[in-house]
Length: 138
Image 1: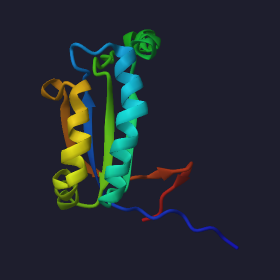
Image 2 (image 1 turned 135 degrees about the vertical axis):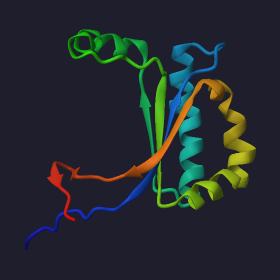
Image 3 (image 1 turned 180 degrees about the vertical axis):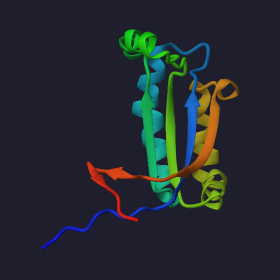
Image 4 (image 1 turned 120 degrees about the horizontal axis):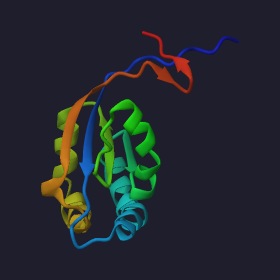
């Protein structure tokens, strides 16, 4: 039986390049984001129909490993502490999620470890061309 290639699906991706609050150490930021905030956000997002939530942690120990490659390629290493990607099918889904009671009463109040004013948001459609090492069908 032949396996079918994954099909393309146009997804909206909200990326938030996160900075930690000035009074939060790098270690505490990553520990809190992983152990406390991540599970809260996952529960909230899954309950509101959001289809994906991914955290990328970029501690200074990892950034320093990229210095030589960055110098050779001309890349600038981002100074963000990490970023999060949230996948959904529409802006309306995001709006509903942010208006959700659990977000307003539980998740948002926990975001004091973040410096939202120095964080950056991008929003756009993602098109996947390779998934699990396979070219995605049209």
